[in-house]
Length: 267
Length: 242
Image (cartoon, rainbow over all chains, first blue to last red):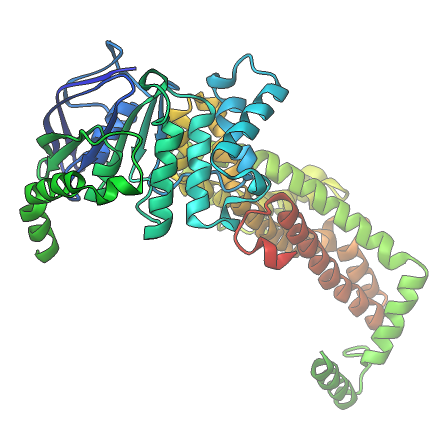
């Protein structure tokens, strides 16, 4: 699935009527099977962009198209992984993963056994088969994140929208999950089998490691500053992180957002 | 407990009037006697069954109403003034009118208890619905769930812990009201037994029944806490409770 943002603008209207522009004139295309990462300082509207593609928020102006059709609301073709996991606390790991299949349209026509098989396969894929009967509050942050990923993958949305999914994790877990994310996305397989991904982060190294293209945004209001192609070879692995090109691209992106980041940190 | 019994005993010795304040021994003996001939349990069971019936009624009224009020601002603005006007009126205040309508019997105490329990359950449900995690609702929306599926699968389970807490509050206030209702408006039950033995001037038995009010209240609350631990094992503190 391809996603097209055409001169998208989003204003938030406060209760007193004051309008705050959050996103200004964002145009961006996500190609079929492409891994696009948005980086930018806080307040640059990256989450707003993601929510608009998800259909959770409407643009004030401009258009968002999914495979050429305008986005009018949430849909199972565009799955979202939220920043703080958004797991259902009253359901076990396996029940969380089965949730979209059992109660949403994605599982229509699937028998209980078929759903069970899909859940098992997805849990194995993310390495959670042993934790299937635990409740979310019994899991570490990294495991919760895997549950959220498994729940997202279980109903096979065509586009994966991921809002800072790894932000709350420690550095080591983060590195491991970056590797796994690329594996699950299918970086070892043919490009045609990959799903379209939009991934948000504020970590530049993470962006460069994962992305085909990095969208650098600036804030107040959020605009696209530059789109940086990342032509590092796939599959990417630990050697990628040591690649001089990796460092060069990361340096370039840092130079783009450095001033704003300093201003935000010192104000 | 021991200190309480000691003070009670000292006070009974000082007053030296078994009609006003019988000794702990006399009350224990009365308690044991009433337990042996079963009267204690038959009267308690009657009151507890009324409590359960009243809770069922209160729950059937308050839970759907609270769900609707929590989800629709307009509906809440419509209903809330009535609720807030009725809420400060104690259930006991309705006993005289209830006597006209229902007469002496089962209905009056059930009505008074249902009335009393409705408000805590209603308010607990409304605030529970309002504090449902928006993110979970959004997550369900992105999975394509319909609005009714979101209510059934996200909102209702989200509010279940708050609902069970409010049910406990409802039980506590309903239980205080039932005694008052049975004192005047029932042919049997704990409240009736208390007033019967007061008229018979058998103070130890009267106090034994008063003690039974506390015992039943305690076990009702315990049962609800166990129910909560079973129904909501994910809720904070659930593991400590088991």
